[in-house]
Image (cartoon, rainbow, N blue to C red; front, side):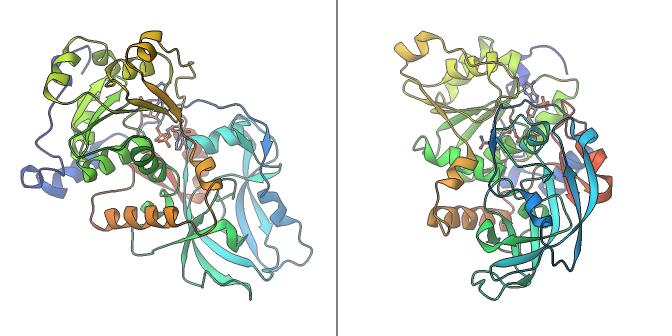
Length: 401
Ligand SMILES: NC(=O)c1ccc[n+]([C@@H]2O[C@H](COP(=O)([O-])OP(=O)(O)OC[C@H]3O[C@@H](n4cnc5c(N)ncnc54)[C@H](OP(=O)(O)O)[C@@H]3O)[C@@H](O)[C@H]2O)c1
């Protein structure tokens, strides 16, 4: 579906979880999800220089080693499919506070790619193991470990852990326990995108049921989580995506997970958007993943005093703010970085625990799901890396170890 059409602004009644009786249930959702082509995509880079304290390479320096792990390692920065290779690593001794973890699944996120390229805001010492997110099962714990036991599922507490490997010994403090009664792929993709969506919906504006949130890159993993969490909170979402030949399929898919309105970037600039905001309140919150022109359009639709939170820069274009947005509409411009939020939390943060608990409840209630994804066997990592860097796909690549 090409061009600009009023039909691109569609009120959703058919398949929104908010109208369960009108929704044709999981059958339709499955068809929409499985029928959606998993093509690749492209992302932007964020410059940086800081070294990570917890360099994964430190795991290979022990002289007394017992076990081995297969790991995706890079010795220099560059294009991931060129610089990453699979290597066998010796695991260090467990030590008093060590936790031996068998990694089960780990996604390939834009920030992982940017880290390998050397363009992310934090960079590990080289050589490094790739991957910042994932879920593993605890196999063994050191004698002073108190918070974890064999059989527990764990996710990284922070960025830079190096999750693209079959096994590792991590310090207890670098891990967060998660329930293992949620789907594996949900656990593997929990700690970056749903966390980000949750925080942005809770920490910037006090949203009430019936309020509107507008977001660009709505088909990203973060965007999909915003749609589902918004629906669970009774918040309307206006979801902006780039136009594409299969727009209708994408629109249907976002609607099936709860999107209220799906519009293209082109439609966002059209007068018909005014008609939409006669029917629903103007957004109090805009979530900007793209930058450039796209973000200016988000700003234009915010209600007076509203907030735009920038969390990504996929277009690699700067944010140019019309002075009128500040003078006449008193718009607030904020930024969000999950890594910093986690760093600012104490180890056993009640806010973190509450967020995990609420998100897991939503997984169990099937109100929140993992983003559309492809599971790729660990050994075929190059396919996953390449697929994750192509444009116009909303399909997360998840490595299965
Ligand atoms: N600040 C934080 O704490 C935080 C946390 C999580 C994620 N992020 C950032 O959020 C972004 C999305 O992450 P994700 O894992 O959700 O990504 P994802 O699932 O890989 O999706 C990428 C999204 O970016 C869009 N996109 C790609 N290139 C674009 C371009 N040139 N112009 C406009 N849109 C473009 C894609 O749309 P198409 O389908 O049209 O290609 C897609 O919607 C990344 O930049 C990531 O680093 C930030």
